[in-house]
Picture (cartoon, rainbow, N blue to C red):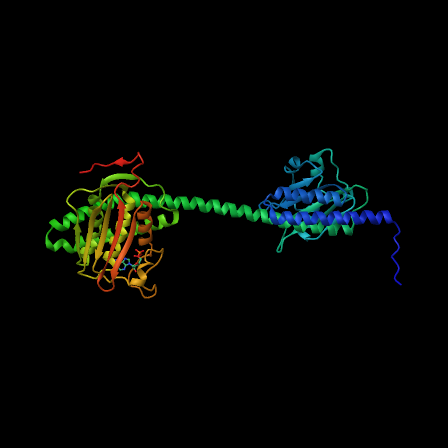
Amino acid sequence: MATAPLIDNPQHALKQLQQQVMFLNRMVAISRLLNSTVDFNHLLQLIMDTATEILEAEASSILLVDEHTGDLFFVASSGTPQEELSQIKVPMEGSIAGTIVKSGEPLIVGDVSQDSRHYAGVDDSLGSFHTQSILGVPLNLRTHCIGVLEVLNKCNGEPFNQGDVEILLSLASQAAVAIENARLIRSLRDANRRLAELDSLKSNFISIVSHELRTPLMVVLGYAGFLREHSAPSATGEIDMVLKGARQLQSIIDQITNLEYLEHGLGDQERVCFKLQDLIDEVSEQWRPLADGKRQTLRKNFPARPITVCVDRSQIGLALSNLLNNAVTFTPEEGQLEVSIRPHTGMVAVSVVDTGIGIAKEKLERIFDRFYQVEDHLTRHHEGLGVGLSVAKEIVELHGGRIWAESVVGRGSRFTFMLPIRWDDAVADVKREDVR
Ligand code: ADP
C-alpha cells in the first residue's frame, strides 16, 4: 500500500505551494496581457512587481543594451525610483549586467561588496538604496541578448537559489517578448508615419503636375494647332510631331490624375457654372492632334443655344477626356469620331461616338469596372491602365448623373453621360463664370 510522503515542515511546504500558485496566476495574467495589450510599460511593471514579490526581493530592474553606445540603461524597475534610474548608464565592460549580456547566462552574486564587477554608480545615484546581493538573468531573443532582468537583496537575507533562477528566467522570457513587441510596434508606427508623409508628398507632386503643367501644355497645344492651320504645308510634319508629343504628355497627366482619384477618391467638388459647349470644345481640341495624326475626322454636334451647367469643371473635363482618349485609341485610321450635346428637361446628355473596333455585348457590363480591359493583357495592342472609364463613371455618378455604353463589334461605340444641368443647385456657394 502506498504511503503518503512525510513532510518535515508542513507550514514551509504550504507556503511554497501558495507561492507557486501565486506565481502561476501571475504568469497567466502576464501572458494574457502580453497577447492583448500595447501598453508595454504597464506589462513590464507587472513583470517587475511579480519578480520582487515572488522572489521576496527588495527591488528589481530591467536594463537594456543601448545599440549605439553599447552601455546598458534602465527601462523599468520596482522598489527603486525609476526616474533616477533612467538617468544612469551601466557600462558593458566590467559590470555584472554586462557579464550576463555577454555570456547569455544567469548569474547569482551573493555579496556584491566582494565582487569587483559590481557597478557602484547605481547605489551612489540612488543614495538610500544599497545593493547586497543580485540575481540577474539575460533577456534573450532568438538570435541575441537584448538586456538583463535583475532582482536585488533577498528579504530574508539568504542568497538567491537555483529555484529563483528558474522563476526569473520565465519572467525574463515574457519581458523579452514584450520589449521586442514594443520595438516592432514603434518601428511599424514610424514606417507608417514615413509612408503617410511620402504619400502626401506624392499627392502634392501629382496635384502640381496636373494643375501647373496643364496650363502651359494647353498653350503649346493651342499655338501648335494654330501654326498647323496657318503655316506652309512643308512645315506640317514637324508641327504634327510637336502636337503629338504634347498630346501624349496630356494623356499621361490624365492617367496620373485618374490614378490619384482612384487612390484618394474624388475629394471635394468645386462647382462652377459655365457653358458646356466651351468645355467640350476645349477637351476635343486637345484630342484633335492625335485624331488628325490617325487621319480620323473629329466632329462636334452642338445645339445652337448655350447650355449652362453647374458642375466641377475639371472633373467633368477629365471624364470627357477619358472617353475621347478611348475613342481615338480604339478607332482605326480614317475613322469617324463625334462629340454631341443633347439637352433634356433639367438634364443634358453628352455622347462620344466612334466607328472603331466596338465592344462585345457581354463585355459592355464590365468595361466600367476598375482595371478592366477587353483585350487580353498579354496580347493587347493598346496602352492604358484600364481606369479611365471607372473614373468617368465615379465622376458622373457623383454629379447625380449616369453613364452607359452601346456598341457593335466592328462597327463602333457610343458612350453617353447624362448630367443634371444644375447639379446640387440648392448649394448657394456656386461660382459663376462668364457665360457667353
Ligand atoms: P484603358 O486605359 O484601357 O482605355 P478604360 O477604363 O478607359 O481603360 O477602358 C476599359 C476598356 O474598355 C478598354 O481597355 C477597352 O478594352 C474598352 N473600351 C473603352 N472604350 C472603348 C471604345 N471606344 N471602343 C472600344 N473599346 C473600348
